[in-house]
Image 1 (cartoon, rainbow, N blue to C red):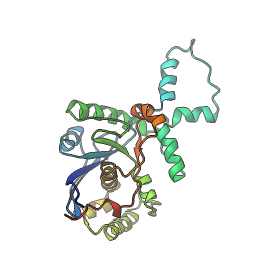
Image 2: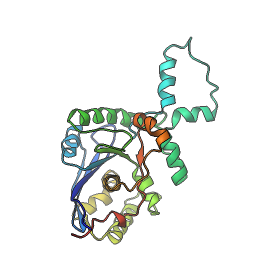
Image 3: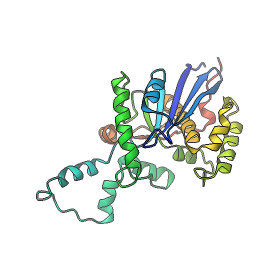
Image 4: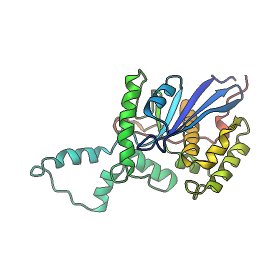
Length: 254
């Protein structure tokens, strides 16, 4: 069995270029190589990098909950708005997307809410970035079923691999242990001089994990939206969660 050569990329997106990281992995016969890892990345650099990529995973919500969008639209006409009950169950329909509820079932915790948390600012930037990628000629499908771009969640990816991730975003020593495990579990993945930056920067580390999740998407090794949620996922986005281990991402030998 042979494997088709490909390049995947990962973006740890922030509201501004500061805090945004971009990683590119080249996949060849029997192995892979981290060929780029950059910090403080602008939209133009991401758009340029995406041109030669099989899949690019972006760590950011691709949309807002349908119920939240409708609520905000209705709220513009307060006199005509139906009175919500305001209870937690109702508020959660506004706070979380269908993919967030699915992630909650998979890993036992809620992702951050795009409509009630500060990540909403990053999602606004992401909306513009997706538009730029589409304008560049790339197919953008927020459900991830087709096209080049997929929504990813590095923390959830690591948890599906059953890695100990407590404190990894704040503690470089935890990230060092994770990088060492990555090198141990995937000796075919050459991190090269970028390994130290992954230890020093949470953003860089998450961008690499995002690029690995993009590889899972390219191989079809993830759970796509169920048919009954496909249309909603095309509006709200759908998080690609690998259904395989890191070792399973290894390219086959020629």
